[in-house]
Length: 278
Length: 324
Image (cartoon, rainbow over all chains, first blue to last red; front, side, top):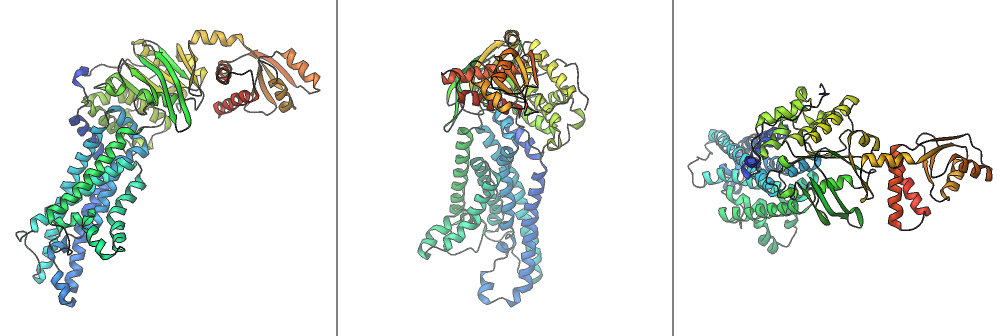
């Protein structure tokens, strides 16, 4: 690092100021540069793919191995499509963590001050982060779901248990998983903006997805059936499971409910981002 | 041009900045001086719209910061605390900032070269030394070729070569007609670079003056260095005298500096109380001492009473804060 002892006058090769206004498209480009220039992005998305595809394949293998020992009712509830997509359960954690970090990674390092100085209106940052992260998780989630489905069916096909992509509901379930993971990712982005702290963001996301369903199970069963289907995990699962729990919402109603959680998280995040000191 | 009007920031019951009004003119380096915790950083954060003022407002180049359609073209800022994601390379950090304004990527190369980070630009910013981090902060500030530059403690962590570079940079930025506001808790540093001073203490404006005027006022005051084994007792006695300020030495408990009393008065006081003196050395008050003197006066003005024990104690605390 050689110091410039004589301070050089700053070159003025920039376009006129009127051509350099902050716009949503430009903020989007900035967020895309940020997203692709961090190693954690690649590690976490890779983890998401490996968990969806690899864990899904593993479960299919195990099922195949035990299929002959299953009871009749267990066989009846078996659905090859659902089974091949089951890796989502862990993949949503990886995607959720990355989504939370979209904001909390900036708060913990101080980067948020640079970000907000460049975009003092602030809200475009939230929309841009949500769009970039939503698009990335949708692509990765959908490709993983497709891969998990086809690998799973290839495994099942040895005992002729596999489903075909043309079977009723299958495309909806496979593409639905991509949408589900995108929605979870967006909830995570909103929670990150809302809570501004990585540990708090991850804890509340996991609480929402993993702990809340267990707590609801402790309630009287009449309450359970009123609440359980509307929790984000169960509501979203309605979209990508063919043979789901009784009482499950219909696919698109379930996804609609999940989208309400997405909107709530993003609106909450927007309010905090706008009002609080950076 | 920066204008602050009645800026106030409260965090719960604690007031960080109180009714601060000042104007920073273009073409010169303006020093923003105050002890640590005086509210300098908070004020700068309010100028940039990072913190919302509890009362008052601030404009930069005639508008509130957030109302500028291309803020990085108007104001470039380097805040004291780092504002860089540690996992990202310096180049990508600057590229992401440049992209928000649609600035060409060659501008990123320009500022990287300007601050001398060319060889490490592709390395993770988290691995940067303090000095390299400061240079990256300055590169971010200059990215938009702004008319106003705000730097919070820019020489912190820099080697002598880097300090010299910053001083020259600030002067040349001002010479180009830009508004340059630089904060520091070191009066001596400001005396070398700044032409004008805005001095704050405890969140309030203490002085808004030219450096020349400030230093001429400072050299009026004489100080006396005192070395005595009875420093505690003699210090107490001196503090009871009107107009006397006692500044403990950082290195030795036996030594302190006294202003507002000459060697003769100190000697007599010691003799009267049968205290032993090892040394009594008159010397010109340094700029730092003049700065202490100034902040002390502000506290007195604030309490509205004559030199009380509490006022003196707070002045001493501030001395310790500055020394730390």
